[in-house]
Structures are given as C-alpha cells and as structure tokens.
Image 1 (cartoon, rainbow, N blue to C red):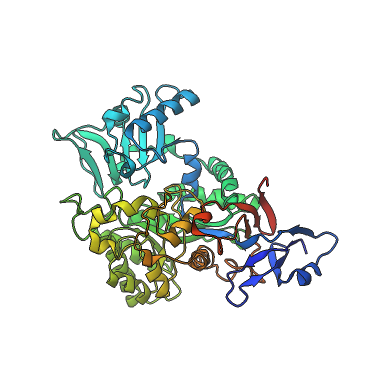
Image 2: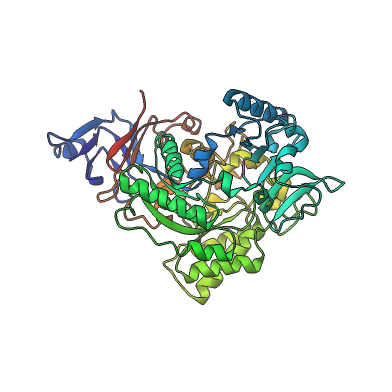
Length: 541
C-alpha cells in the first residue's frame, strides 16, 4: 500500500458500509476500507501511515457549480465582499490603488458588493465611483456578477453616453434625462469587455489555476464543476490549459467544465470541441452545456412571471428570447450533451422545465442528465416537475445568507414559502448536488453546509430559520456535496464515497460535523486533504 489512514472516524457516504476506522490506498485508488487492525495488516515497509487520532474523515468535497478561473482572477481585484456602504466601496478602491501603485489610465476592477447590506439599500452609481479616481477607469461588480457599476471615465473610454442604445437581454440604467447612471445589468455588461486587453492566453490561465488550487485544498475540495468561459475562443484556451496541466501532473483537482458561450452559433462551435483522452479524463473533462436563462434575485434581474413586489413594472431580464433559448437546448440535446441552465426566477425556471420535458419527449435520451443551476424561486408544480423530468437541481444553500431577508420583498410571501426548497427536492428523490457559485460566495463548504442545515445566514438570522422545514440534515448535505455531485458529472462510479475502487480523494475535519451543534460547523476546518492518494494539504496543527 502507498498510504494508510488509520484511527479515524470515517463517514464513507457508502450506504452499504457507512462507518469505518481506516482506509488503504494504492496507485491513487482506495484498496480497502475497514477496521484499524485489518487495514494496518496491509502495510509494507514503504507505506506511509497517518494516524487520524479519532478525527472525522469524509470523501473530498465536490463543488458542483463554481467559476474557478473567475475566482483566481478575483484574487487580484478589489475585494468588496462584506462592505456595508457605498463609502466603504470608495475607501477600498482608494486603498487598493494606493497600495498597488496602479498607474494612471489602467482600469481597476472590484467585486462583491451587495446593496441589500447597505443602510441606503441602493447600488453605487458613476457619481460615487468618480470619487475614487479621475485617472483610473473603475468597474465594481455586484456579488452576483449580473450587475456592475462603473465610473464616468470607464464609460468615456468605452464610448458610452446618452446615445448608447439599449442592449437586448441587458439593461442600461438611466436618469430622468436619459443619461447612463453607471449601472449596467446582464448583457449590457458586455459593453465593457475588451478581448484584446482583458483576455488571457493559455499559459496565463494555467498560472491562474495553479494559484487557486491550494486555497481549494485548504477547504477539502478535490473536485469542481466549473464554468470558466463566456465564449468559444476563451473556452478553447481554458480547455488547452486544463489538458496541459493534467498531462504534466500539475492538476491536483478533478474538473468538469460547464461549457458556456453566447448565442446559438457560438454554442455550435463549443459543442464541436473533442472530449479528452483517457490520460486526461480522470482530472479534466468537458461537462454539460451551460446556458444563462436570466439574472439574479438580488439585482432584480431574475426573470419572473409577475412584477417584482418591490419594483413594479420590472419582471427581470431573460438573457435570450424564448425561441433562441429553446434552439440552444435543442442543439445540445441533439448532440447528446446535457445542459446545466442558470435559472433563478420562476419564469426562467418554467422555460427550463418546459424545454427539458419537450426535448426528452421528442427525442428521448435517458442518459442525459439535464439540470438547472440555482433553482431559487419556484412553485409547487415546478418542484414536482424536477422529479417528473429527472432534472438535476444544482443548489447553493449559502445563497440563503444573502437572500433570505429580501425574498419576500421581491416575490411576496406565498412564492417565498415554496422557494429555496431543498428538502422538498431531496425527499422527492431529485439529485441536489451542492455548490457555492464561487466567487459569488466563497468556496468554504462549512458555511454552505451550515446554511443548508439551519436555513440561517452567517449571523444566525432569522432565529427560526427561513422556511425551516426545508432544512437538510448534515448527512444529507454532505451526501449531496459528494455523491450527488459525482452523479451530476457522470462520475458516481469513481468518486463521491470512501469505497473500494474509488479515487482516493478525502478530507480530514477538525470537528465531527455530524455530531456537533450546528453553530460549531462554522468553526470547523480541514486538517488534511488527500487527492489521488497523496496528501496535498496539511494544516499547521
């Protein structure tokens, strides 16, 4: 054996063998799971033996929906998470520019603000951002990345003014005189894309991935399902970067790429990318086709059947027309590729459920695990349709932290009562892989699990939990973070459990999250992460 972990409290997620004391590993695969005595009898002179001293061991976490490359890029941006006022946004940008000595003329980007946490409850505009600098173009993304605010210089540099036309599938906020206020939503943010200046080459993408990996290992994350591109040209470079890292042995994560483009023609191009070879496949592969149906609840761009209660006349923004959306789903299904569709509003949700039902009815492909990402605003009939049509529900319980206090204001009490309905989906037998949508929220799995089992935000509010009947148990949450996530990427036969024949990807926890109070879950850390049978992270303790 190459590695033996003994003296542990193993939660295997294998329903046929749920608990054990030790595990033996050889050539990156789990060879045996059992008692300390049985496993230690398998060691040789070259076996590395690690005594877990009674600590809890689980399968490595698998974040079912994130943006790994976006997270890596964000590490070099202004961190606006947790800001509680527009003044604080201004202060953080000024401090960042001064600390990093950003030269005049160079754009400065930040991300993470959420006006729901501000006393004024309003987003920043060009007027406030102009206070940061008159020589730096400024762009500040809302936490959801569906809305951005820019300063006047950024708009001037991009030629945006009163005469700039509205954008299909986007919104340019304007004042009473028709002048842009500096707030742009959905497709309108494409006005600030500059392929020549902002795009990365393959080598730079490789460096960004390598920069991010240690932070995931620290969280016990060994697999991700990641949306890393917005068009066919960037996807090809992302594809090449992951393949290069996998073949060189540097990729210490298992990555399933959720392939996103914009427009039917470009989806045709990304669907022509070849699947990877057998050497690369254990570490990187092409996953489902990622489609954006609408925006975010916090930004009021999620597409609703009815007007927002706190914004009459606004039903959000569908990214495509219904015909364009259906055509993309049709194309993916015809080419035997599953879809993973971003949908938050109930109108967008209905588009997704109707399209999946239709394509499976017209040309049944039961092997395709079509899914919907986020699944936030739903009614009872829609929840039942997930099960009826075998739709995977990629959920992010951590979103309760930012959203619970505004859901009823946005959609009304009745609809809020059937939303973020994770337990209902679980009890119906729907696959609910857990993820974080990082960098929208951080990768921390313990915050995600805490929100799943308490239905509270990270300040323990509301006291009784938001729709507490929809809380998962800790076991259900971890199962969804491991087994369900593996199923979503068609890898349930090789990962998600501590079981003979599975990849040796595991995490040792500082606390037994299955037995401690829910509040203590937030205090839990990862002490050891094993990937491919090798230790890739060890805490200083």
